[in-house]
Image 1 (tube, rainbow, N blue to C red):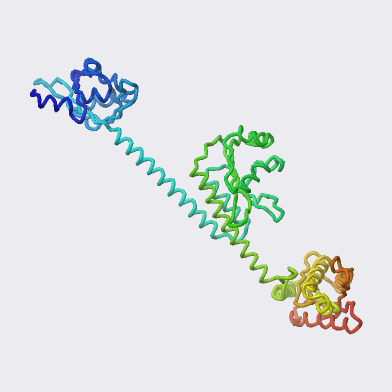
Image 2 (image 1 turned 60 degrees about the vertical axis):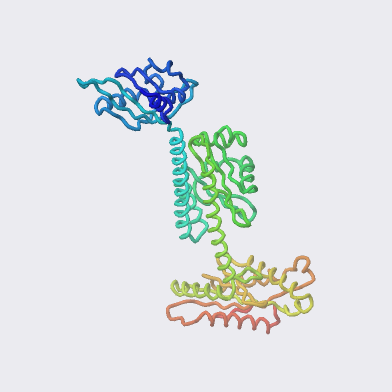
Length: 466
């Protein structure tokens, strides 16, 4: 071999070695020796399998040598060489068999390529692929949740949809959705809560932390749970749960409640999984804001803004419903018309703000004096209406008198200087198939009864029959 070819062999950009059929290395170039940290003399005379890791040794014996003997060559075999200093060198090996004239194996010649860069690239590619799959999965989960949330119209249906979405997304065997009421108390809206029997005092800490910070609170094991509540730890252990997450359901300006997921085994919660839980809860919060806004708009459309009682639209709708039901069962109903006596002087003397307070107080008193199921509304000004279903003449008069006496009571401070009475008219109607009385006529008859009470000295009840 010429010096030029000798230098090319020894310092080639890849490793070279030769070995016999028994796998003993007979020659090695300087490049391969330098990569492994062994000297050429340390490699020559050793079996190639001895410098491979355990996995490589198994592959060498079960696959590498068998293919070589059958085909005479192998290409791009991925192996790991154990270097002298103990670190692993990933390589790709190409080998060919050199035969003697009878066809026997004279030697096996191999070229070795350092695949560290390729392995790192493949690792990065795998990481990127997994990240893309995770992102795709997250988008799919949120899309599915968006579809499910888009069909709900009530808070209860939303809570149920959120529970199902969380179960599927996070493989949580138990999920609880809890909403806050106006007083800030949490109650179960949907799902199952293994901690339902645990005293609220023991759970106030983590729940309060999740709501106040607007962040997910995690318990990765029962040991962590024990740091907050021994009672909860015992309850979870009895029900075979070991970890949980508490996710705040937070809108733009309001905290609506919590999404709580329970897991059977201890967990190491990945950041992307916690971010997905938060995203799902935020999505639910947006829908909840829409549901509550819609409910508020519907309430405003059918209720008096000053007193919160039914407005003219809702009163007409309710009376239409009651009138139809009364005719079907041939029963009776009553419409009670209430007009405050001398209310104009209250506005003139004390101002409209005080007058509004009086109307609110009267509305509350009327509402407290009627029966369960009766509808109380404000027509406007100082006129109120009560619709009583399934009531006879005597009972209707009792309700009307109870309303009148409730209004007569002294006003609370700072309205104590104001004395208010009411003139009341009651229209009683008996329904049958031949009845042609309309709801407008019932309102008019009750109004007539109210005017008769005015004419007879006010602070009185007059009953008329339709």
